[in-house]
Length: 215
Image 1: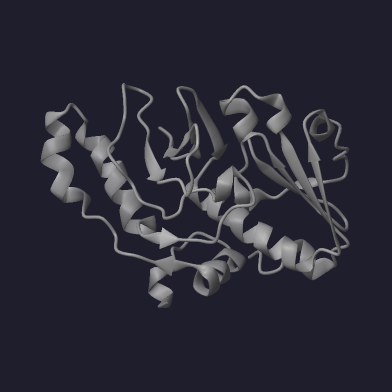
Image 2 (image 1 turned 45 degrees about the vertical axis):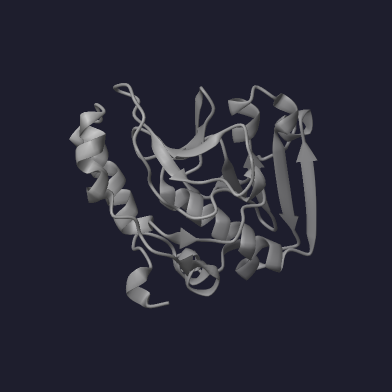
């Protein structure tokens, strides 16, 4: 994969993850749909958003997420869905049949939509960073512990700091002195299913395991 294919504005860890584990397929030509979408009432500014997303991320296939049945198979934009001011468009098709879709929100958030909207990360970059961090943590951790349901809310995170690059909203990552904690609330919120709350604790990490190529 050529370096020019790797988007800017992400950490070296995420760039390495894309370069080593990602695969680019063809990007969609959004312009071929513009006239048809306008005829169906989609504002041009929303079409521009899809086109911009496709230019940066379109055609990128990444290894599966630990949750959400792996996340989108490939990042690709599709027709925006309104109405104003809450226009969303598909971030990429699911790998399996799911009761929700992966979508980009009105302010560029990456999240889930199933009649209601839940933003997982404030940016698409945040989603990619979270995938890269999960792969890194799995490879470095000496122990891995999974919590579900009410146990997630009982996590003691005093002394931990939020990992800024994942731009966490419903989902987030936390860094402690020797562990990383990933908290996934998106599925529980979009499906109104509190037992689906999940947290993964990656323990026994040294300084490299805690950060890796995080700049």
